[in-house]
Each structure stands twice: as structure tokens, then as C-alpha cells.
Amino acid sequence: MEKYILKEALINNEQVVGGFLSLNNTSIVEMMGYSNFDFVVIDNEHGAFSEVDIAEMIKVSKYVGITPIVRTVKKSEAIQKVLDSGAHGIQVPMINNESEARFVVQCALFPPKGKRGVSYSIPAAKYGLYSGKEYLDYTNNHLAIAIQIETEEAVNNIENILTVEDIDIIFIGKTDLSINLGLDVHSLEFNEILENLITKIKTSNKKIGLVTSDVHTTKDSINQDIDYTVVVMNSIITKAMKEITSLKE
Image (cartoon, rainbow, N blue to C red):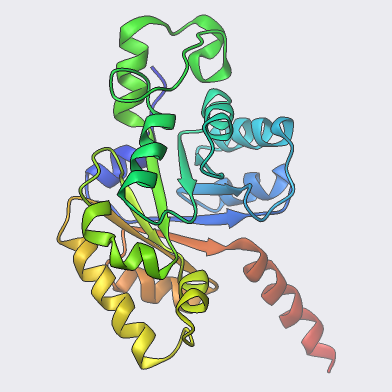
């Protein structure tokens, strides 16, 4: 069976670093692999990708040895499509309560754990080379499922959300959360809420994820013992280009 590197690393309590990629460019995925990123989050929330584009990004990420995760909306057909295309996990934004978290699990996993439709002629099953109970059970046990906490409702429901089995990663979307709460992301009040969330997640059996924007914030995230750090690739690329052009100013 295909090896699911990211899930194995998280189970072994290793910290992983990946990147949000909203640019439809497989060469950047290659560069991330050659630069030893652990995973790529193909951002189909904010990026412009077709189903074919996502399938190609997934293939290239596997070719260079990084785990393909797709950020996708909380709709059954959307989750089904990216997982059938061979993604090793999903990241679903705007999860507000226990019911929505359970819905994500139901969409992602095969029976008896979930309600995902079964086909063996798909890329994820190597076009029919994998099949039967062994494949279904293996996939259920190795897919990575991340959900995003981004609203006041989600903060108020965090204890119940943490009880949902088969959710691996609780990702705190700091930007959306701060805006939803009406707080500055750098304010003392927001950071108290953030630290409280981090503490609750760390005392559960879930892994915690945060977004970063550059080397310094990524280093801070790692030093904070965050399990799953995702840097915004657009921010890195833009900053690097600006540093070059600033030399002539």
C-alpha cells in the first residue's frame, strides 16, 4: 500500500512544516519537495484550481516526496473528489461545532467509520491495484483530517469538537478568527484566546496547526511546539522578490 508519510510523522509526535499553495503551478510544488517541505496544502479555498489541476498537483507532490493535502469546502462531493484523486488528507475551513466536524469525518472515511463512496478504479486505489477491505481499512487509518477553527462559535464549542474521533489536526485560522471576534490579531485579548485554545488542544489527543508567513513566524511556531505549521507560500515568494527589488532603492 502507498505510504502516508505525514500521518505517520504526526503519530510519532514529529513536528511537520508545509506550505499553503494557492498558485496553480506544479513547479512550485517541485521546489517545495526539493527544499524538504513535509507537505503542501493545495489551497482550493482561496486558489483557482480545476479538478484536473488538483489531480496534477497531487501527482507532482508525490513524485517529489511531499504529502498532498487539499484545503476544500465542507461538501461531500468536494471531499470525495480530492481524496479519490489521491490526496493523503484534507483540511476543511470554518468548522463551527461538533456536528460539522463529524460530517467531515463521515465524508472522508469509508464505511464503517464513514459514508464515503467506494471506487477502486481511481488514482487513490492505483486504478484498481488496491481493493477490498484491506484497502478501505488502510485508507481510513492513514488519511490525515484537519479542520479549521475560525469563528467565535467554534471557540465556544471547542471542547465538544475535540471529542470527535478521527479528526487528527485542529488548525487555528488566526486571521479569520481575529476578524470574526472583532479583535486585532496582535492584541493581548486575542492572544489570550489563542493561548487558551492551544492549551485545550494540546491536552486532547489532537495535533495543533497554525499558519505562518515567513521564516521568523515559522521559527516561532516550531519553538512553540506546534505540530503542524503551514507557511503561506505567496508571502514567502513576494517577500523574496521585494528584497531583490529593494536593493535598487
